[in-house]
Image 1: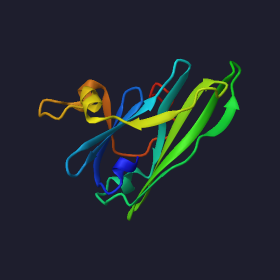
Image 2 (image 1 turned 90 degrees about the horizontal axis):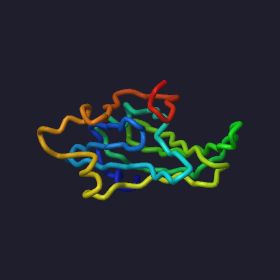
Image 3 (image 1 turned 135 degrees about the vertical axis):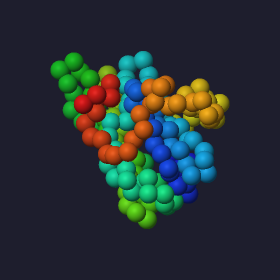
Image 4 (image 1 turned 90 degrees about the vertical axis):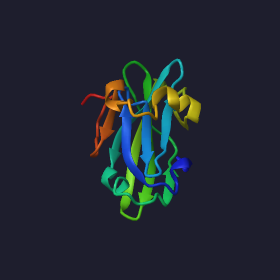
Length: 152
């Protein structure tokens, strides 16, 4: 998330599977972050709070990425870990919840910034590109409690 530092965000989009976020800056650049999934785990952006403080056009002045915290195991031996990203502007704090579900916590969750060539596969910069037609949802308010499929 360090690449967001010093930027003002005008729009945030999330992919249909909740595995990628596209931050559109006022410059305008698009910075895309994706989750890194392994063979036996699933990582996704589960929730966001304080989104309006991020979208008010103020520069991001602080970025904090917390470590993964273990949650319980389910009946199938799947463990869930949770981490949070906090993006602070002078208008407040926007916090992202990231979840990782996998084999008894064996596989760690990761988030990474896509390089420009990779991001171009997901996010194009041309006038014909309509993100919503490619499965992206524009975020305008907080969401809490989404499962991996992006449904309530």
